[in-house]
Each structure stands twice: as structure tokens, then as C-alpha cells.
Image 1: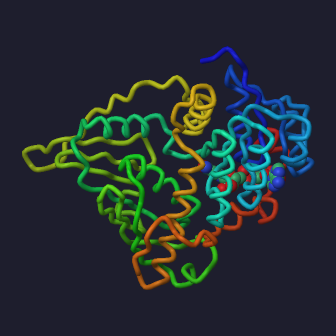
Image 2 (image 1 turned 90 degrees about the vertical axis):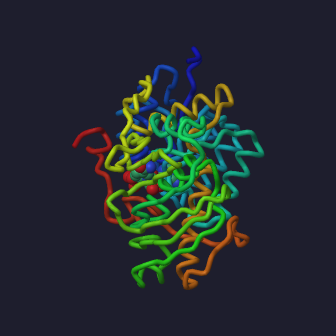
Image 3 (image 1 turned 90 degrees about the horizontal axis):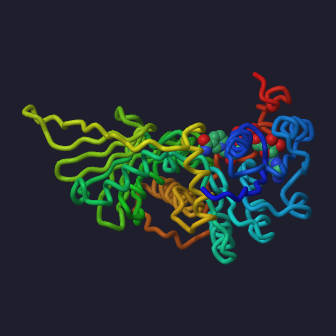
Length: 355
Ligand SMILES: NC(=O)c1ccc[n+]([C@@H]2O[C@H](COP(=O)([O-])OP(=O)(O)OC[C@H]3O[C@@H](n4cnc5c(N)ncnc54)[C@H](O)[C@@H]3O)[C@@H](O)[C@H]2O)c1
């Protein structure tokens, strides 16, 4: 770890932003120097809670005074693009956004491309792909320890395929070491298929990966609700926890579960948010690979859009990358607009860290 303290700004300091603030306030090599929070009472509460005096209503106001090394954008999705691009244009070295990245595909493109053009590290937020054990399982797959992959599957791809579904797509792409290149999907219920959002939409279908793998997609729990990949004799199962690994078969033909013995990780206090943040810092310092990136979130949005499109077209196969970048899939209103606008505000007492 470097001796230098990275200056950090939190942009949007509601429920999830406060989780980022707790983490960045705890690490020895980061210091929160400013917070942009739109709601005046909450702004004051989080300023006191995290000992930050430089408080602003939004990213443009903050960036006029302070350009931090790192900015965590944790606003409702509607405001993510403006904040990410303002940070990138101001010269922030590393910026993160949470899930889903956007509703319109071209907005996701604009964020990824602006960061890339300016050499800004664009991290991807609180996703299970950034869990240390998920990363280690992926390294073992990649090392050839289980042989060549022969199959993959996604389970429980329903409820909110853009909001929560990017967890599945991000792990699938990591384990498979490939992109989704074609989506064939069936969607229920009718009302969800007819709407603009992913709210309640359940998708069954199949993804074809660029590696040639055919990946069945189960919209409901199977009983797994995660992602599996397998080879001739091994299976790796991510099911919202450190991945299980099986290799070989016993006398009854059942898979034999291996003791995974994942290496201890020095940063464990904040669950997989830790992996996301520590990997962003490492990438800013050394150029190492991000464990979850803005690009990963963009790819996940694209797959979710393609899945809904295929389902609306009577399961016609949809090829990726999508040519029409104006296509969109809106997340449920809470994610899009935040708690204040959707009848679930966080009280100042809660923002201060109370119950
Ligand atoms: N990865 C995860 O596990 C996870 C979990 C929950 C939420 N999220 C995502 O985090 C985001 C925020 O969710 P939340 O639960 O914290 O919502 P929230 O409503 O509690 O907080 C959002 C905050 O952003 C502030 N805000 C709104 N517009 C702003 C702007 N332009 N500039 C600065 N501040 C602004 C609001 O005042 C509010 O305090 C959403 O995108 C959501 O999808 C991710």
C-alpha cells in the first residue's frame, strides 16, 4: 500500500453513499475531503458524521472548488451520467458509479468513452464480481485447474434484470472469460414486458457466449439464484456468496465438493464493496485490472436490454453489440430517482448513523 493519502469525494450521500463513506473514512490511505449531497438536512448530517466540512449540493458545485483523486458517484441512476462526466472532465483520477449504470445505452457509452478518452479509471461499484473469492475462483478457472469450460448457466434472472441482474452478467462474463454475443429470451408477466422498467420482469432463455458456450438462463430460482460454469469434471457455483467448487465424482456419481481454501484478504470490513473500492485504488496507483468496471456495468445493461427486446419479439435472437444505442431499460423508480422522490426518504437521524 502506498504512503500517499488519496483524497476522495462522495457524490450522493444517501443510504448507499454512506456505505462508501464508511469505507473510505476507515481506510488508512484515503481521506474524504468533500461530499456532494442534494438534500440539505442529510448533507449536514453526513458532514458531521464523517467529519467533512466541504459540503456541496451536487458534483459541478463541488468540482469548482475541489478536484479529488477519487470520486464515488452514488446518486440515483438518473443523475449518474452528469456526475461521472463532470468528474472525468475535471481531472479526477478514478471515478466509480453504482448499479445500474444508466437506463439508455448511449448514456452508458458516453460515460465509458469519456473516462477512457481522458485516462480516468472508471470503476463499477458494489457488485459481487468484486468479492475477493469470486476473483480468486475466476483466476483458478483461467489457470486451467478445472480444464476447458464446457457449459455455463444463469439462475434466478428475474425481478429486476437491469438493477440486480448486472450481478449475474458481471460474474458470468468473468467466469466464462467471454462476452454475451446473442440473446434469446422469453419474458413474463405480460405487464412487466409491456412496461418501460425492469420491475418484476422474469427472463428465461439462453445466452450464446463469444467463446461458443451456450448458457441457459432460468428466470426463477432452480434452487440456485446465481451463475454456474463447468468443465468435464468440475463445477464452480457463485450463488451470492464465496463460490463453491466441485471436482470429480464419487461412487454414486455425485460431484465431490472441494475445500476452496480461499486466501485470506486483508480488506474484509465492508463485504464486497471493499473489493470494489480497493481494486479502484490499486488501479489508480498501478494500472492493474479493475475487479468491477464501468465497462462491466455497461455490458450488463446491454444484455438486459437485449433480453427484454428478444422476449418482446417472440424470442427472436438478438445479436450483441446492439446497433441501436438509443435503446433503454429503466430500473425501478427507487433506483432511478432515489428514496426522497419515491416515498422512502432516509431521515436525518438515520443519515447520522442512528437507527
Ligand atoms: N450495489 C448495491 O448493492 C446497491 C444497493 C443499493 C443501492 N444501489 C444504487 O445506489 C444508488 C443510490 O441508492 P440509495 O439507496 O443510496 O438511494 P438514496 O435515495 O438513499 O440516496 C441517494 C442520494 O443521492 C442524493 N442525490 C440525488 N441527486 C443528487 C445529485 N444530483 N447530486 C448529489 N446528490 C444527489 C439524494 O439526495 C440522496 O441522498 C442507486 O443507483 C441504487 O441503484 C446499489
